[in-house]
Image (cartoon, rainbow, N blue to C red):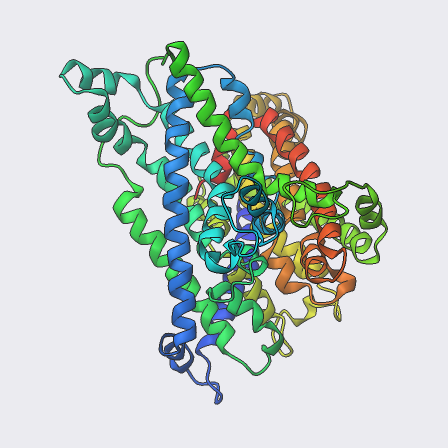
Amino acid sequence: MSKTLSLLIFLVMTAFFACFFAYPIWAALESAFRGPDHKFTLEYITEVFLNELYREGLWNSFIIAVWTTLGSLVIALPLAVCYVRFAFPGRALLNSLVLMPMILPPFVGAIGIKAMLGQAGALNSLLINLGLMDAMHPTDWLGQQRMLGIIIMEVLHLYPIIYLNAAAALSNLDPAMEEAAANLGCNAWSRFWRVTLPLIMPGVFAGGTIVFVWSFTEMGVPLLFDYDRVTAVQVFRSINDLSGNPFPYALVTVMLVFSTLFYLTSKLLFGSSSASGGGRATTGRETIQLPPWLGWACTAFFAGVTFLAVLPHLGVVLLSFSKDWYGTVIPHSLTLSHYHDALGHELTLSSIANSLKYSALAMLVALVLGIGVAYVSVRTRIWGRQILDAMAMLPLAVPGIVMAFGYLAMTREGQPFHWLMLGDDPILLLVIAYAVRRLPYVVRSAAAGFQQVSPTLEEAAQNLGARPEKALWRITLPLVAPNLVAGGLLAFSFAMLEVSDSMILAQQAAHFPITKAIYSLVLALGSGPNLASALGVWAMIFLAVTILGAGVILGKKLGALFRG
């Protein structure tokens, strides 16, 4: 590709990120620091820390994030070590199932957990049947330990992110380093803590950062658990009073500052390993054949964790089929009517159509942008290309709720981007928001494809008379098409089930995406939760198929899509 065209792509990408990534963040920050006289003020930020309710929300969000990250580490690291180091029955199958917890947003899984852990839910019914609980005084699990329930839900949903990164880091670790330590008399436990863990820490940190920021700003699960004492829910509750209330923007600003500080602090402490040799294995690693009982123990551990992780999904499935699920371990009777009603309900039909429309358009935008960013980053030597690549990955680290409120701020009356709001229709905002948030998946997939295809193929085509642009279109893009398909599938499917942007930017029922429709149905009386579960199952099947397809295409490189 000509240098002029490469520079043009670089400038267009930079302008896009300036307008739809940097400016929304600035718009949210400006609203938090602008006083009634339009002068700079710290009054609203100060009030966040002086207000006991806001302080409690921040502290609770921090506690949830810390315990979610630690819980995910405790689960993911042993799983990654077992998979990379040992051979055991069902190893390949269990590894392929590791992404199952991510096939549904955790707030949808919370619907199933509420049915299972409610006072008349499945767990209490089982304990009563076993004589371990008084039927007259059942335990209110969700009322007494709602924060614990939120943490468990988020751990079971997010641990695959750390697993993918840790397993990739372990696979790339040169076994010669550990063999040298063993020759010097270092036992297996000491080798892990003093050699292996420091070398894989950048990979663990990459996944841990995403988990921490994700759980710190998670809104859906606390909403479903009716737990208002976290910052993200406090922000969401105030969305109807944005015109004259600067405090939601102040809360969003504080969340952004804290998320950035947590990221930078973790990066400083854990992001770069002082050890060397963790780049690429120079010698092959053979998996260790375990004794039968140890092998089956690894299988049981993997299978047990996967079963626990999909329990919320199982609860959603059972609720979607149940006629009556009250006071029993499993539903009294089953029916398919909720699936029929879900596809015939006015709200669900429009939400499915809206999500397909928003997500398809967002995928096309993300593909165009992703190909441009990846090509400039991999195939050119333009100054600033690394900055462009880093900007494309930043949406993974910036809380979705921050971006959503930034889009609201930049499209208010009198703002430069007010034209993006087509009356009450948020289609342009949602397409841009979805595209920006899911762009990292496309960039990493496309970059992997460009790295695998030798540039000499383009050079050969140019030597035969093809223009650089035609060589790219006819030679390179067809060869990286599988990577683009995988990245596009992930961008499309995760956009279909996006929570923060959907909940905040879509305010009219006619424009609700699927996730906002599910939330509205959960709050409805009668069979609302059953219809929401049926819609959730349809979404679960759809996302499972797309993730499976992307996993088949990308293989081990799938973990690179979830690195901060």
